[in-house]
Image (tube, rainbow, N blue to C red; front, side, top):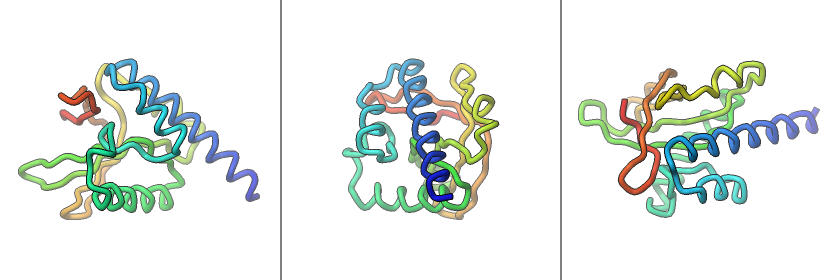
Length: 144
C-alpha cells in the first residue's frame, strides 16, 4: 500500500509541473518557477519565495501542508495577498486527490483557475474560481 501512495504522489507532482508549465506559458512567468518546483519539490510562493522572509514562507507552507494532509492534495503554488476588507488571504493552487477529475480541474479559462482560498485572519476556507494575472515583478497574482 505504501508504494501505491508514493506512486500517486509522484503522479500529482507530474501533474503539478504540467500545470505550472501551462501557467508559465499563459502568463509569461519566469521558467525558473517550474524548475524550482521540480528540483526542490518546494511549493512556490508568489513566484519567488526568496523575496519573502523565511518565517512567512514557513507559515504559509504549514497551512498548505495541513490542507494537503486533510484533502490528499498537492499544493504547487501559493499566492499571498492582502485584501483591505478581509485581511491576509492565502490562495492555493493544487492537485486534488481524485485523479479522475484532473482534466476538468486543470482547465484554465483565459485567466481563471480553480483554487482553495484561506483567510488567515478568520481561518475561513472556500473553493472556487479565481482570476490570475502577471504581477509587476513577473509573479502570478490574484485579481479576482
